[in-house]
Length: 77
Image (cartoon, rainbow, N blue to C red):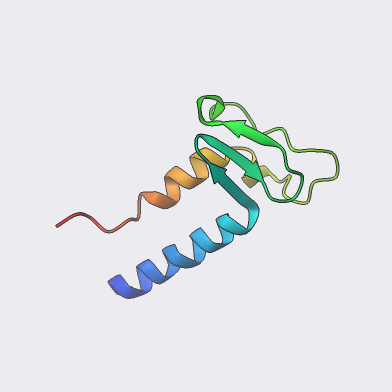
């Protein structure tokens, strides 16, 4: 995979993340149910609202999901 392909994947992953989550200051919001979580609660599972479409196994720790995605940022030169 070339560097361009790698960052294209990062772009896609961040776009998908942004479709599910919104961040304002140190708070992350679920775009579907509107529930929020502060960054200092990142170790706790995210408590989605009833019938939330984003409530999946993968969407229980959005702060850590974002941190994982950002590991692929290009390095500073």
